[in-house]
Amino acid sequence: VSATSDDEIGWLVHSFNHMTDDLRTGKMALEEANVELKESNQELEARRNYMATVLENVAAGVLSLDKHGRVSTMNRSAQVMLGIDAQAALGRVYRHVFSATHLDSIRGLMKRMASSRRESIADQIQLLVGGRVLILLVNISLLRDSDSHYLGMVLVFDDLTELIRAQKLAAWRDVAQGIAHEIK
Image (cartoon, rainbow, N blue to C red; front, side):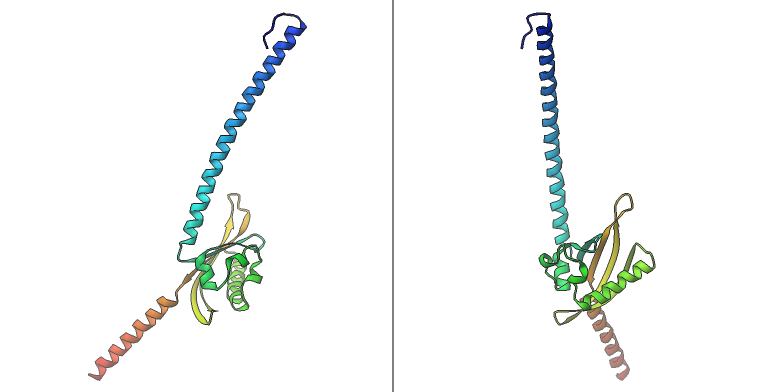
């Protein structure tokens, strides 16, 4: 509004114009912040999707637990190795997700890690899954934020079954060759 006088009405018009300029400036700043926030959210979502894709395509089984022991992530390899449906497991306490056979070995590793006050532990375990005995290398690590607050755990499972079977076959082949050589 254009001011036509220098009296109180003119001063009121001047104040009104100043207020509308401040509101316009504030609105523009909010719109810019909103655009930046949307771009940041899109970038974060793209990173999250990328990490989820990487996790899904890793050959190792990866399972994470939140600070309350609930399953928060499980990749496809972990589902196959452990014979567990991720949709049924997500959000549930790990004690209810694993069968007794799975739980005993893994719980033992967790107890050893806690009693030794270590941040991580790795060991080889045997699990019976779907009628097959699997030999897994299990690595359990604590998750902490930048302020060292406990966030949960991550469990990584590497299936060593075929590797160990191949090593045994190679060892028996060497024994057989040695016996054949001695017989000659």
